Image (cartoon, rainbow, N blue to C red; front, side, top):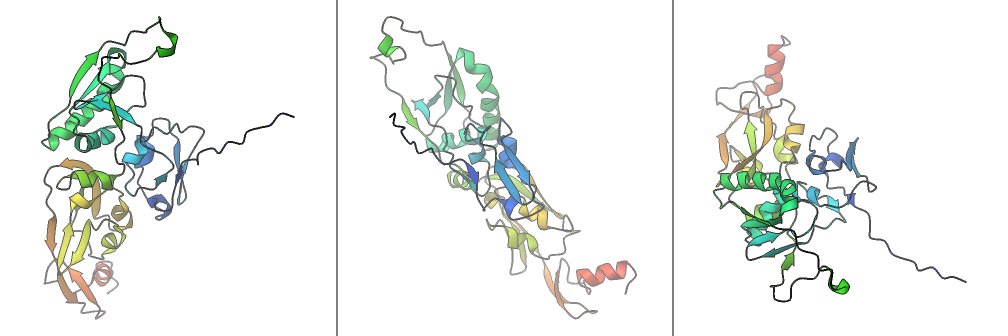
Length: 294
């Protein structure tokens, strides 16, 4: 009787409960889906799924997820030598978000690409250099090589490296926006814009921010772009739509501080916060007065 060997297949990629789409019903974060080249990620009501029939685990989503919610996918192992990322075959294309981690983690300063693959990699390299220029970092250079000749004389070493060549190093980079923040602690990737004319200082944005990029404390409304990972949860919970998050690369980003005042509403006698000390009505009573209810 023929015996069958039981194989343990690797676990399928999943998106865990940290995903902001699973925590906020109106979440607008689509970073993972936008970075997926095959459209393998879809959103449902308070849910996010990976279609494992489509996903080929390129790892792009790992570098854009603001909360590290993607499991069972590993970043692609790449080769490098003498400060150059060496592309020797048609491997998964690296996103600019991955390449900018290579820039700091391995001090990579250029790419070596065989001629047939240049058109595939050039857009990612150009997008990377735009980010590096904004950060006042040295941009990457490009070295174009000819395709390796096939050694047809020895079948067992068909794709071997030349014996006198220096072996290539290989490695993977850390994933996630928080890992990128560790390599660029003084720089920011997003900008939090606040409209004080419509903001009612309810504090919902600060409560939902896991990164403490928004804080209301000691009469200071503080926005720290360096901490922001672009999950846009603050934008979702702000019902006056006073807060907006935009992708924006900036070097040496400094926190913004806005001063606010405490007051007691003359109508409902409840405490509230306002942008000026002259305010006498809380936001709810002020709205009722505007609508003619007071």
